[in-house]
Image (tube, rainbow, N blue to C red):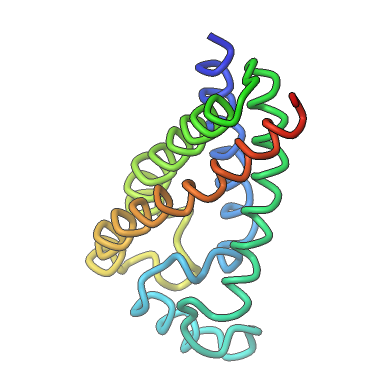
Length: 166
């Protein structure tokens, strides 16, 4: 029961963080937008610090690794509170939470809000409906990568739980 509540709360907190950060500054997540949208934004905003479309740049990879480290720390605490006492319980509980947030991110945030809510669009690209629909394929692929990235995070969490409860 605690695990289910943690999954729901995690989705709500993650969603709130992402939505508020996008509404405050859409360019924070510019690498998540399709390349044609990024190019239009760069053309319309030549004074922006963003000079070319970002894919998996070193800056983006660093941000993602830092986020994984933060999530690892949070997940260890959540999994411990959920009652995990062994490596396997820790890894499975962690992956359940990770998977729930990943599916929520893919379906609700990426395929729902980012594609259809114009307030989430980069300034000057609000009319690019066709290009924003390109997010569908990218979001699904990113969702699969998210599931894969969750595996080592879950294994590390399981190992830490094993060491804590030893």
